[in-house]
Image 1 (cartoon, rainbow, N blue to C red):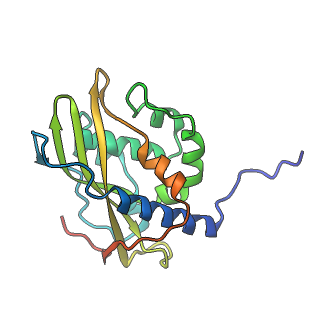
Image 2: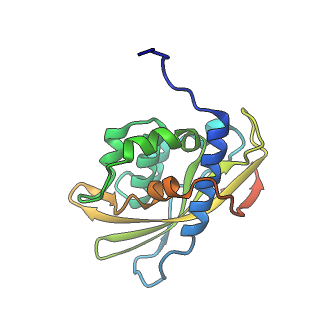
Image 3: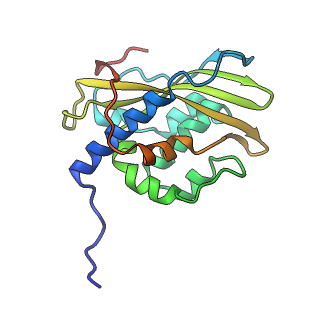
Length: 197
C-alpha cells in the first residue's frame, strides 16, 4: 500500500459541492409556517464580508450570538464543521439523530464549509423547540482569495430542540441533503461583497 499523505481537495470537487449546497439551501427555503411563539430577530450579524477570512466562524462570533441560544448553537456547530472536528460536531445534535455518515460528510463538504457561514436572521421558539431562519453566505464560485466581490446567500431553516445540554440540532437534514443532491445548480440571490449590519 502506498502512503500518499493527506488528501487534498480537488478544485472540481469544490465546484460540485458548492452547486449541491446551493441546491439544498434553495430546497429548504420557507420550510414550516409562522405558528411558533417567541419570534425574535437573531443575533449573528456580520458587518462586512469582503475577504475569505470574514467567513470563518470565530469564538467571538459564538459569544456575540449567545452560547446558550439556538443561533449560538448553530454557530458553534458550523465552526466545528469548518475545523473538521467530528466529535464536537456530533455533540451539536440532539439524542437519537442518525449520524452514521457525519465524518464522511464533513470530509467531503469541508471545502465549502470552510468558505461559508450561517447568518441567522430570525429564531422562533415554542415548547422546547426552535426554528432558525438562516442564510448561508458564500463567495460566488468564480472568485479567488483573498478578496470577495460577490456574496451568494441561500436560505435554510434549521430545527433545534432544547435538551438538558442546551440547544441541539433536531436532525442532520442539512448535511444529508448535501450528500444526496450532487451537482444541481439552482438560482441564488447575490449581493456585493460588503454587507452592512
